[in-house]
Amino acid sequence: MRVEQGFQPTPYTEGNPFTTDPVLPNLLKRLLPRDVHEEVYGDLERFGLKVLTTLHDLTSKTSEPRVVQYDQWGRRIDDLQTSEGWRGLKAQMQEEGVIGIPFERKYGEFSRVYGFMKQFIAIGDSDVISCPFAMTDGTSRVLELVGSPAVKRDIFPRLTSRDPSLAFTAGQWMTERPGGSDVSQTETIARPVSNASSPYGPVYRIDGFKWFSSATDSDIAVALARTGPPESGSRGLSLFLIPLRRPLIRPVDAPRPPALTNNIKIHRLKNKFGTKILPTAELSLEGAEGYLLGEVNQGVKFITPVLNITRIHSALTSVGSIRKCLAIATAYSSVRAISGGRQLLKDNVLHVAELARAHLTYRALTHFVFGVVLLLGKTECKVATDDEVLRLRLLTPAVKAFAADKASGVMEECMTMLGGQGYMEESRIGTVLKDAMVEKIWEGTTTVLSLDMVRAAAKPGVLHASASTISNMHQWANTIVSSCPADLVHRLAERLATLRICVTEVISAYTNPSTPLLSRPTLALFAYTTSALYLLEHAIWAHESGEATANTDIEVFRRWIDEGGLLPALQDVRRVKTAGADRTKMDAEIVYGNTST
Ligand code: UCC
Ligand code: FAD
Image (cartoon, rainbow, N blue to C red):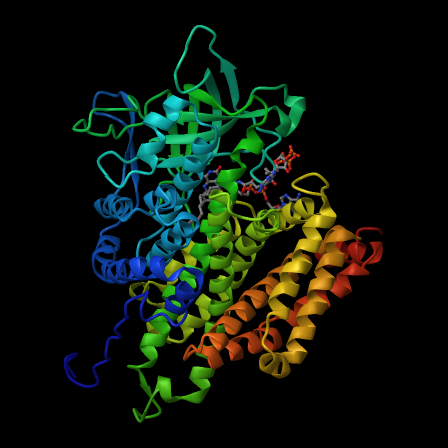
């Protein structure tokens, strides 16, 4: 039989990623004041269509970057070549203002929600373009906070520009061969140049080897380098602004030099499992010129805005990747017939039950991540209360780690929901899944972030006393739970009681971390509890404002408590709390065998 004969599969059609999403329009309506909502809704709807057309086409034109290390005359040039599609995606995102929107702050503290929403709906149809923009975002914030007047005049406006011919992107260089989670062994050395001056800051010459550089096609990087003795560990590191290509500030019509200059060489491009379009390189710095940012030997502290902002981007990317895969799986259910062609998948209860389970996680994570985004906007615009600033500090590592942890399982389910078609490269689920798996590693592994949370919660004086950090969670939870209308309290009594128990358990685990084993289970319980609180907040809003979605929103909250994984997480914390040396010893035996005999 010829291929044109016989059964012809029907391709699915994806809807506008913003307007047809089951969560986003209503979430936006709740988070934004009415006038802001009216203004940005149309733009997001327009952009949603652009995602399906322009960005989708550009993504099909991306290919892996390559480096031409030498020219035909044997000269070292390190010319990094990226694809037309990649450069086109970059330009589109700049024009759309993904960095412009949050720093123009036209909508005050709500600008963050708008900007992140734009990025969110593009995830899955724009390769990993959000990676360089995440680092550009974090770097912009650092420069806004501590850049010299000349940095604020020449560099900051380019990082946040909507004009691709002017706009810069930025990278972040922390990781070195001795350690990425722990930067205390950093080998890169920065030496002050006493006879040089720059309006951008004190000038240093920097030598070292940066093990991972993901935005190698960027214009600048923020980098840690040693200014104190090796024994000073991470307290002997400073933060530098390093140009990758010079001259940094060129006339508008001058082309951007493709090759790296400033005494920086590309050792090689990394051979990665995913994120293959992203030019991640190993770099040798051989006397690169850099400008000190902030105070000497305070580098870790000054780079933390980059860490915190990129971690929120990372969480957004995990959840956005789920969105893309779910949109495909849901659309496919409307075209694929099973059971002898008599039934569409969307009419099969067993299949829809699996889709609903996946959507449950998506909904919980989306509310969680945008709750954190709103806190970021408030904090940056200085309208956050002290409690909200504290909450943002705790929720940032939690949402990053939790979203990364949950995402891949849901995406795998989406893949199987297309059967063999899902496993094909053309479905793009595999690429999105592979790309998203790195969210468990970069910008802090899950374990490292759980340790960061314990430290932030328990260290007196970090922001406030630890007691205040912890009681903040209590108060916030109480405010949400006690705002529940009486008729809902009646329907949800058991779940509200469970939530209160979880909050108490999280607080007790953070206040008395009896064992280091508690950090990961506590992060998980904290994240489950917080996402449930956000779902509850949304359900209350929908109920009180008579939204057509109210019943669904209440059911989603109920299921997230009963079926989402919160109860096993609670049991985990309780079990680990009492774990002693015996358990640790047995862990080692399970892994390495009994080595005592
Ligand atoms: O992976 C990377 C780029 C990937 C590509 C971009 C992806 C973008 C998103 C995806 C979109 C597609 S760049 C490499 C990222 N590397 C990490 O994330 C490293 C993970 N390790 C940590 O986070 C560690 O906790 C360290 C390195 C921050 C810990 O360093 P130290 O040396 O132990 O430092 P301390 O003593 O813990 O912290 C120094 C100070 C303290 O304040 P003071 O001095 O006042 O006591 C801390 O309280 O910094 C404060 N601090 C923070 N403050 C530490 N962490 C934070 C924080 N997150 N927020 C606020
Ligand atoms: P390690 O720190 O050696 O971790 C190994 C394991 O040990 C992990 O499971 C970790 O959780 C665990 N571990 C570490 N410390 C502890 C502890 N104290 N207690 C318990 N367990 C612990 N970095 C940059 O600076 N810039 C970039 O642009 C960049 N791009 C990247 C792109 C990709 C695709 C990837 C994969 C990485 C990139 N990185 C970048 C590096 C990334 O941030 C690090 O890989 C990450 O921080 C982990 O560091 P590491 O690789 O040294 O692993």
